[in-house]
Length: 331
Ligand code: CUA
Image (cartoon, rainbow, N blue to C red; front, top):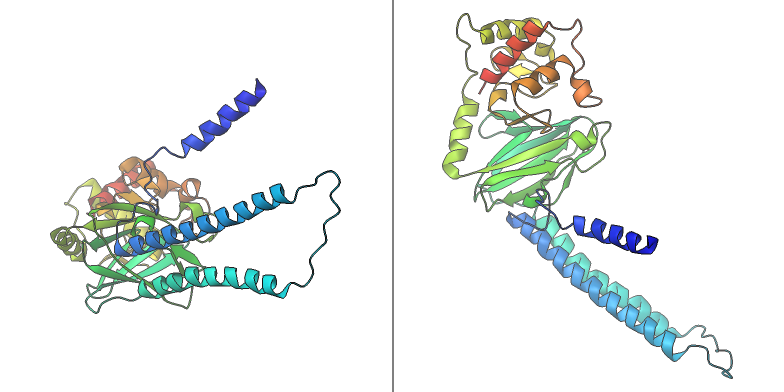
C-alpha cells in the first residue's frame, strides 16, 4: 500500500509539470533569437539521445555477454589498448565539436544587428531594470516596449552588481556586468506581453527582479513612444493629484526619482510616465492605488532589501493617498 502511494505521488508530481500556461518557457519561441536557441536545444537534445542509446546498448551487451557463468575463468583485464584509448577520446571530442560550433555561431549571430535596428540601453539595478532609447531620448523602467518585426539591439550593462537580462520567449539570457556592455538582438514575431526574470543571483531581491517586454504593433509602438516623450501630465488645480505633487516635491522621493521638470533623481526608476505602466516594483505588483500606497509607505516590506527605504518620518495616510493620485495621473 505505501508503495502504491509513493508511485501515485511521484506520478502526480511528474504530471504537475504538464500544466500551464508557461509564460517563461524557452520552448515557445516568439522571436528569431528564441527560435535559434530552440533549434540549438533540439539539435543538442538529439545528439545527447544518440549518445545515451549507444552507451546504454553497449552496457547491456557487456552485462549479458560477459556475465559470470559457472566454470568460466576470471576475465583478463585490458591495459593500454591504444586503439580503444584513441577511439574513446576522439568520439566525445567530435560530438563536442558538433555541439560547440553551432552554439558559438548562435552566440555571435544573436549579438549582431542590422544598422537600422532599434537600439536600447539596458541597465540592471538592484532590483529593477532601466531602459534607455538613445535615438528617441526616452528613458523608462521595468517595461521594455519594442515594435513588432523590427530588430532590437539591447546593450546590456549594470549600475551595481552582476545581473542577467532574460525574457525567455524572446531569446537567451545575457549578463549585465558593471563596466562592460554585452549585446543581444532579436526580432519579435508576435505582438504580446512577455515576462522576464533576472537570471543571475544579485542579492536579497534577485527573485523579485522581474521585467516585462511588450511587443507592440508598429503604430502601437509609435503611440507609446509619443506618450512617453511628452512631458508629465499636469494635475488639475485643487485636485488630490495637485496636493500629491506638492507632497512629492517636499519628500525624499525627489532625491532618487526623475519626473521630468519636477525632480532629477536617477537612483530609482524614472516616474515621468509611471501611470502608463501596468506593474510596479519591477513587475512584482499590479500598478493600482492599493499596491502603490503600500509600496510608498513601506517598500522593503513588499520587496526585501529594497533600496527605497521606509519613509522617515512616515507620511500621513492623506499624504500617501494624494501621492498615489498624482503618480496614477502620470500616464
Ligand atoms: Cu538582478 Cu538577479
